[in-house]
Amino acid sequence: MTIGMATTEFRDYTNSRLAQELSEQGIRIIQLFLTQSDSNYWRYGGRSDLPGLTPERAREIAGVYRSAGISIHSIGVYKTLIHPDSDERQANLAYFEAMMKVGGHMGVRTFVSEAGHYQPDGPAPRIPYDYQDEVWKTTIATVRELARLAEVHDATVLLEPIYRSIFASAKRTRVFLEEVGSPRIRALLDPANLLEVNDLEEMFDQLQPWIGCLHAKDRKLHVTQGVPAGQGDLDYLKFVTLAAKRTPGVPLILEYAGSKNYRQALAHLRAAIRKAGLTEA
Image (cartoon, rainbow, N blue to C red; front, side, top):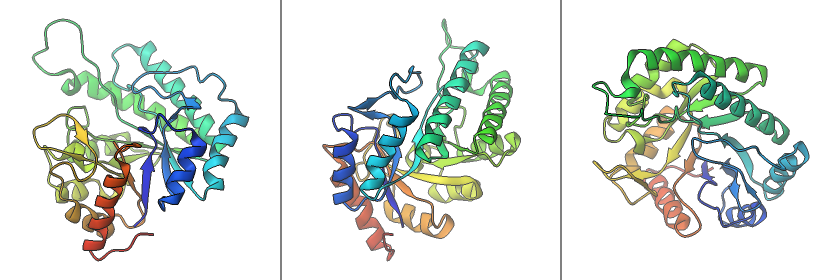
């Protein structure tokens, strides 16, 4: 099994320092979030003008990791695709395309995102915003446009379900992907995000053909905030066993782990892999 690391929480590291340290820990693949101290662009759900992120700088960042023996599996985008304002949605799609261009300079063709979150002003509606009929239809149209952009840039977008979103379950995510109907739009399965509503077997049953990446973090049941691997209620032995059987070759990317706690999360994941009788690639 291939273990990777999301760079999101390493905000106090330069790319060079992070590449060196992860390489020393045997990590050979990352999911790049542009949060490092010398490339601090990423904003969850928001946008950046990407100042200074020229094609040359993008190639330089990618080169830092590759020189350390680390490949970049994907780039984190995470923009709001469900916003009711069409101008806002178009701006987020334009940002997505800008990141596809950055990825092209880095030699990266896979991008990851949620559908995002939106809370209308005023009293809470009778039907939560994410589950309203028109929001589903609009988001289908938006993601089909995203698929068109991905086709232009020879890219793939992996959408991540979470129980507090329009992708509230594995089944709902599968139905959405089937309706979009594009091989350019697939899934990133983070079991901790669906632990509240699906068993592990259900997640893989529903999404197996769509999964292009797995996140490895954790969550306590009935608690909103996710935590690093080993600090929640996710059965990691069952998780890695199912991953090896149902999605062989798909990387497990550790998430919610940074400079202070990634070693513990990494050790927990590696221990589960050994206990399952599996080997790390």
